[in-house]
Picture 1 (tube, rainbow, N blue to C red):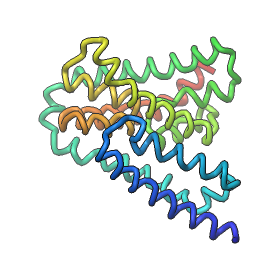
Picture 2: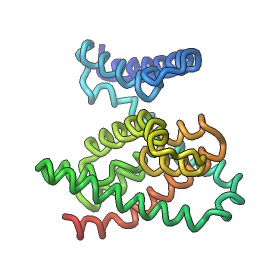
Picture 3: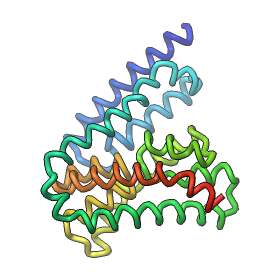
Picture 4: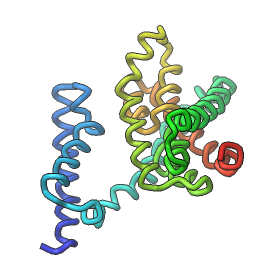
Length: 229
């Protein structure tokens, strides 16, 4: 079997696993069965036990990565439909986005330095809290590695989505907008998907905060690179 056929087969298997996983999650609603958690685990096992290289897997599956861009922009539709909510809370949303961006970038870099991680890891971790298309764009000016950036973004999103509800409960946060803002700022696309499960208002706020955080980080990336590195 040629590399092209292996790549096409991997693409088909990825799609089948994802849609099968979605049906399974709709039925059981357990966190380990969420498509963003369970499907990647199955794919990693497939690559390991099938002795398939990452290059062969991404040969045709890279189209799925490309779709992250349009998918992220699609979050703007419900935001546009709820402009009244945004106009009412624009000041708190703006302050939250700026604070979240500063905390996410500086805490990531400082913790990486505390554990004496390499310079390459520090630069890649700096943009882990924004969604992948924005993170890849922001990583270029500061010297982050695209593969590491994508990995850290996915891990951050899944972890934030998994522990977010527990943190809100422990901190006695009950306001829907606060939950949406937290998910959108800390765990980007995965958190936004979880926010829409909580309610439309939570999802809209998460979408807005996720996109604004991404834009702010991309614009501030050269300054971040100059100040922190």
